[in-house]
Amino acid sequence: MRFMMLVKADKNSEAGVLPSKELVAAMGKFNEEMAKAGVMLAGEGLHASSKGARISFSGKKRTVTDGPFSQAKELLAGFWLIQVKSKAEAIEWASRVPFAEGEIELRQVFEASDFPPEIFPPEDAAREEALRAELQRRRGRP
Image (tube, rainbow, N blue to C red; front, top):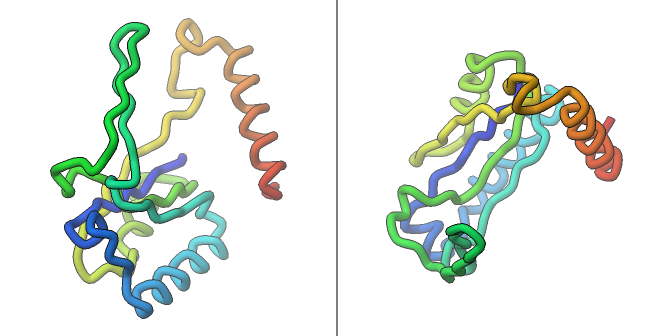
């Protein structure tokens, strides 16, 4: 099972305030622990929404809105993508994030097996799996 651990933004992250040296060191140690345990697939911090954009879709029309965006508590400041055996294990890892304050939202990532074959036929699932394997190979992962 893959889960995204989503780090919620706050007024500091939206203002572009960088984390302290101590927090960066603690996050590095946490990332190393997850990597050594074989659960971390990816993890990154995100720039403030003022450097981003949103693309809205309505039929064939696309509308681009440049940031910043309001409601910092609904925005993301970073993420981890982890692969674990259960939601309970994902919660265990998310609970170990070395934050003094903040919030982590945990969301399971869809797998091909989550879809019935009439929506995601086996040949499409096989193509998707081959694509994932190729992307991992390019990144040097087994």
